Structure formats: C-alpha cells, structure tokens
Image (cartoon, rainbow, N blue to C red; front, side, top):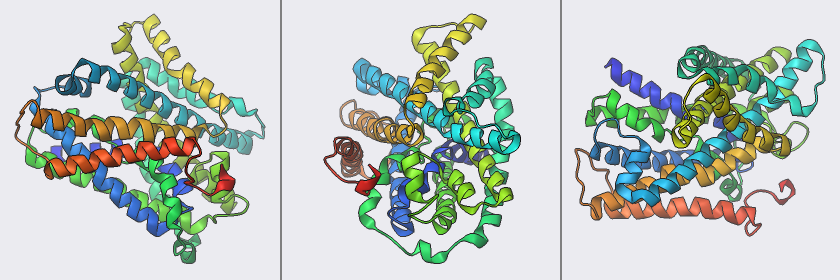
Length: 406
C-alpha cells in the first residue's frame, strides 16, 4: 500500500509543474466550460499514451529507459529522432522556466529593497542560486526540492482558501468555444508524466494491477488541481483591461503574477508570488537536472568538477540567451515544448512503438492497452493534429486566438 501511495504521488508530482501557471492565460479566452472539456480530453489522451508506454516498458527487461524502448521497437533511426526531440523538449522547458521566474524575482526585489533592476537580470537569481544545486547533482536537488514541494502544496492550499471570496461566478459562465484551439499546445505540457513510467515499473515490481491504479489515480489528481486553479484565476481576472488575461498573454506573464497585480492586496500578492516561484523552481530543478544528465550521457562528459561546470554551461547558456531575446519566452517556450516536444515524444512515439511492437514484431507482455488498432489510429491523428495546428498558427494560416493578441 505504501508503494502504491508513493507511486500515485510520484505521478502527480511529475505532472504538476510550472506549466499550470500558464493554463489560465491561454484558456481564459475560451472560458471555463470549454477549458474543462479540453482538460478532460487531454487527460484521457495523455493517460492512454501513458498506458501505451507502460505496455512497451513491460515488454522490456528491467531498468529499460525510454531511449532503450525506442531503439528496440523503432530502431536506431527512431532512437536518434527521439534523442533530438527529447533534447529540444528539455531546452524549451528550461527556457520557459527561466523566463517565467524573471518578472517574479524583479517584483520581489523591488517590493523588498526598492531596487528597479533591468529586465535582463530577471533570470539571474534562478540561474545563480538554484543552478548551483543542479551543478552539485541529484542528491542536492532532491534535498532542496522536498522543501520547495512542501512550499508549493502549502501556498496552493492557501490560495484556494484566501482567493475564493474574490471569485465572480458570473465570469465563469462566459465562453467562446472557437478560442480553445489556442490552448492545446500548452495544455499538453501539463499532463505529461510518461518519463517516470520506467522508474514506476521497477518501483512497483512490475505489478500490473497496481501500475494501472497508480496511473489512473495519479493522473486524475492534477486534473482536479488544474480545474480548481482555473476557477480561481478565471473567476477573478477579467479578459480585457489593465492586468487582464489579454495583458498577461501579450506580456508573457503567468496566472499567479496576474492575480498579484490585479488584486493589489499585499498579503495575497506575496502568496501568489511565492506560489509561482515554488512551481517554477521545482520544475526548473527537475528539467535542468535531466538535461544536464542527458547531455552528460550523450556527449560522454564525465561528472568531474570540470565536467559538471561544462555541463552546466551547456545546460543553461542556450536557454538564457533565448530568454533574454524573447519577452514572451515563458509562454512561447511552453507552446513549442507542448506542440513539438510533449505531443511528439509522449503522444506520437508511444503509438508508433506499440504499433510496431504488436503488429510487426509480434511482441506480447503481461499488459495490453485497450482499444486495438482503432485507438492507436485515433491517438496518431490527434498527435498530428496538435502539431499541425501549431505549425499552421505559426505560419498565420489559422487564427487560434483573437487577432489583436498576435
């Protein structure tokens, strides 16, 4: 039972991250009801592909990681492509977290010390303070992350308690279904926990019954967390005006920062700031540590003192340059990561691996995901559709959000 509870928390903790801060900003134009429908759809889609990945993982020997699974089902070319996509995903997410932390740190420094620092200094506290833990390695990251996760849970609970009286229920009744398409790429980043499945399989001793329960329950917790977060932000922040959803989208701000700006209540503003920071820093630590280790493995760089310094420079300098060159790097990073990283690696690749494993290599294991070929084809079409929409939007071939926000 303890392992099952631990597995549920592992799935939920991996899923919930800084991406949730951006959710109200991109879903708010569609409204609360369309957002709930999109969340449930994405939860089912991403949970289905997670079960596909579990099926593949159970075909393999113990301790097989994602790259090993891709190589054995899709071959060397598939492994190279997945390596590139995974690298792209980690870099874009690191960029988003650096960019998201900047305005919050600058606001805290100005509020406490009265210093108005230039915008380019915004990401530096995150990089210099918490980049040190990444340099030190997994043990240091794990130690500090426990305190940050506790802070995230506490501030989230306090936000639900203290912000609820400010909700205008009338704002939750408005909707514009046509604008929901603009949110699909960022929403995809908020339901991905697939990379933890190989670890989870070993942790639960390949017990299929427990693994199924853990994936369903663990993935449902973030769904509830996100819907309650939408109630708070969409019920308080207006769509138009000063410190509105429109202003947040054009400036690349997150939902918690908007709450602090809109309410202009010092205590609640500080609560929102710290909630944002906890969410961003916990995600930053996990993703940047994964990126560092991924580069060490791929480039064969030893983790000596000099090697770790080189790895940190390779990990942080490209995202820092992107952050400083793009004022909307937080939202842009999440959009690119969702459409071209998460959907490809965690949506499309599990479908391809299961199709080839089942119907070409004739693999069989202790677990088979329901749905057969029809479900695989549907998931394949959805994955291509999400990527296609994002490409069409970038080329201005479709209008996914109000045109004045472009």
